[in-house]
Length: 195
Ligand code: B12
Image (cartoon, rainbow, N blue to C red):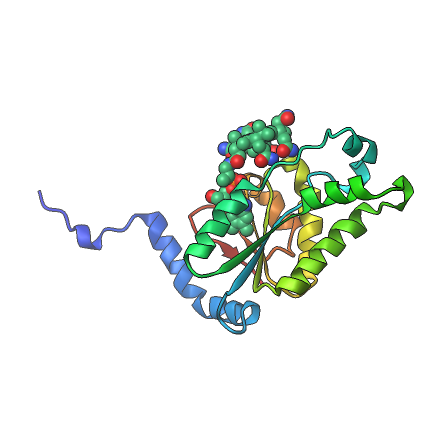
């Protein structure tokens, strides 16, 4: 029995390759738009606050009951970026908001949204990233993720998202967070890029 392995391609792969070729000029235009210098030197990696303003309670902060874990996933990404010559910076807005809430002397003076927005803006202005990557582990953080992506994108820097929630809740991610322009596809190992 002989088999012509050279001409054999699984249907799925054929389709993916086809799509890549058909959209080649569109991808080129997108890359020109997002990365005019056609290079990525600095990537700002961001963890959104776990909580959101409507549900945030300073009394809970003072009792030390909000979780505050290091962003392990972003640490892994930062290591990979460094290994290919890209400078990463991580900003953990969950930690930053808890620290700011703890430090603020008066409950009424604390503005949750203004606080994390100012921290993120300062990081963007200082680091001048070519790309902002936002992580999201928990479904309950979806609204916070959306707000962080909207605020980051308003600075004119392309925003990519990833993490457990993003991979898991793809339909909501694709419809609800247009400000994150680099998102996972329905399937395959590539990324979906939309104008
Ligand atoms: C360790 C862990 C914990 C730890 C630490 C949590 C933390 N905040 O870091 C502890 C034990 C504290 C914990 C607690 C909880 N957990 Co937990 N936990 C996990 C676990 C087992 C591993 C997560 C992890 O660290 N992975 C390793 C890192 C390196 O991977 P990563 O973060 O996903 O990042 C990689 C990729 O996702 C990607 N990536 C990530 N970000 C980005 C961004 C961009 C731009 C790109 C391109 C790529 C990218 O690249 C990274 C490197 O490969 C997951 C299950 C799982 N398999 O993921 C559950 C899981 C995340 N936990 C879950 C839950 C429900 C909880 C709790 C809510 C449980 C509870 N009822 O209390 C609490 C919440 C606590 C909190 N708010 O932090 C669920 C979340 C489900 C959901 N959809 O919301 C999971 C998925 C388990 C499950 N199957 O149910 N958890």
